[in-house]
Image (cartoon, rainbow, N blue to C red):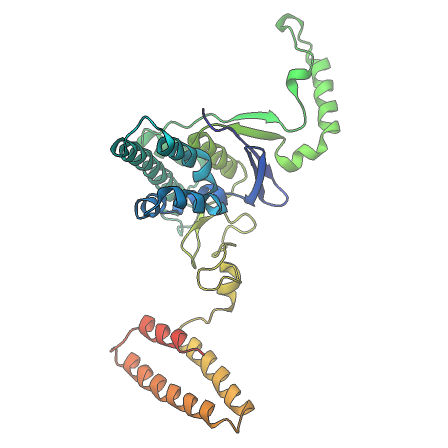
Length: 320
């Protein structure tokens, strides 16, 4: 049985609401799909000694929500199938993971071509024609999304006979509908349903083109994101890999620009600590040792003996 999920987009909050198996999750727009595309799921599962346990771990992480919707249940069904021996289970799971990896690569290639290739060229075409072109070249069929009005059940309304269509009356009914459902504008007027990863991808991509959004790669964590508020945003709102109390955007705003600034920042912090504790000779000696080592590394950096990355790594490791 195919999974059925419902998607609704909040235009004011740049949020997507996804309903699946009687639960509703919400994400920043585009994150659920882009997290799936960026994830090394196949490698994670293949390197696990306990696939069942690994699937349970992934199911608890919202970053793998789309994987859990479209792939996890099928893998579990193969594992729990009593008619299969271990070799056949492994073969079927490998087939699922191979197909999933191909899907990730397809989506990534389409996004790279539509949004990231030549992205710095002013006025470069990022339109839907480019999307259709690359889909055709990859022989990837764009799946038609299914949608229904969010609060207006068309099935409960009187149906029209094609011979009795009165456009004036129909137009008045439509205007009444719009007036009585103003809140639909916030949610694009429709909620979408889909039962395949391809339909989900199409819904997300067509919404991006409709709203004139783009897809970028975060300069901090390297993952894809949709900069809804500003197309020139450089950082996403995921948790930063360097500091789990800050987002990439927050971390980058505080991060020193260049290794020399990082050195200066750490130096001032250490000297201030020494000045506040003038009777603490241990702290003073530790600072002098640190400064001697830092000065040597600075000289090595100037002489191209070490790189900026080498110096930065040492500074961060000794920032205590």
